[in-house]
Amino acid sequence: MNMLSPIHHPTASFHFLRPSLPKHGYCSSRGGLSDIASKTRPKTMIFASHEGNPEVGLQAGERLYLGMDFGTSGARFALIDKQGTIHAEGKREYPLYKSKDAIDWIHSWKSTLLLLLEDVPFHLRQLIASISIDGTSATTIIIDSTTGEPLWRPFLYNESCSDALPKVKSIAPENHTVCAGSSTLCKLVSWWNVYDSNKDSAALLHQADWLLWLLHGNLGVTDYNNALKVGYDPGLDSYPPWLLSQPYSKLLPSVKAPGSPIGSLKEDVRTQYSFPKDCVVCTGTTDSIAAFLAARATQPGKAVTSLGSTLAIKLLSTSRIEDARYGVYSHRLDDKWLVGGASNTGGAVLRQIFTDEQLENLSEQINPMKTSPLDYYPLPTVGERFPMADPKMAPRLHPRPESDAEYLHGILESIARIEAKAYGLLKDLGATQVEEVFTAGGGAKNVKWTKIRERVLGLPVSRAIQTEAAYGAALLALKGAQQCVQ
Image (cartoon, rainbow, N blue to C red; front, side, top):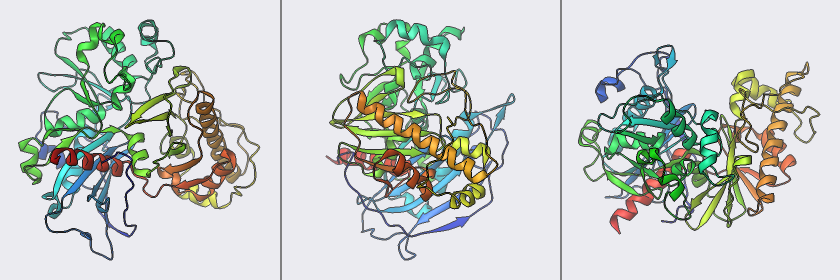
């Protein structure tokens, strides 16, 4: 299957509500799978259906394909058939385990993975042929390959390691993707320079790689989308010589195309969750690329803006564009290129100021055809990645007018201006000109914001038919399963 093949899905759904997750807790890294999963209970389950029948369209012997999305604030799963029809969906907030007064993300992600496996309807698990997972880009985990234990806390997607930037710039080509403080390579070099113990058994994994490793047990495998920011060249389909000559290159994982079969489920995972013996685990991708795949933007000039905690844009282009000065990079997508970047602006800023109820009520008071005179640069903290890479950029959210509706209008329009600047930059750098924008993420639900963006961008903007990255990950699982039978 081509990664961009059109799909179809039903829209009807119903909900089951269950007790919320605890906000704090502790989980030993040496606990068993069931020990971790039993610490918490489902937050919300959502099962897609058609006229009340969650098994619509399933023929005898038909298989299903499981995708999981690990985003910045929570995780989801989607279970689809070969036509792309959704048979089950679920979502989780991350349980915030504490370790030494800091969030223990390793245990949070692991417990969430296991809980999502529990959440897949039991009667559908035996039909699952393959699994894939997407994770946040440049979220980096360095583990001991002999024990599987992390050697350092995870480096999060938006974390800047500017201390390593001079060294990275001295070895990489000018304006390369890795020449940004938040790149995976900067995180690796920063760790390499400060870690004093034996590094011989160390191995680098991206978030998606690590989660998939928990399922298949074959250490050291990634995909070429996740590997881009550590220096992998998807055009050459290899790590470049300037990177392989470095002492830390031995930590780098082997690279496969997204949606490539890696191996079968580990026996303990398979038996505990009653998955079939032939269930295959496949390489994943990044969360924003998974959202792009889900949106069915199949032609050059089509773009997807993901409005989640951050603002990520992806434009399908016939040309490859790379320029670290602006946080611009290109992911390979079959025979085309997915050009774009991710800004730190987005929903995280809105949630710092407004509740969900306020956002809904205040948005109704906004006239989206009226230009806001307020000029902000909404950031949750200091630092920006795209359309300019400036780790010292400060948030600009003042002056604040007396009217909360006017304030929200100004913030939404300012984010739209950042989006417009980003697409304009891609055109100036040589990418295919954007013709239409599909929207994914939570911000896609805000109709007034969509109309503001349409006015500011001067382009048709619509909500993607399918907006969840988990759906894109499920398409990769389907792709991998089809490779297995060829």
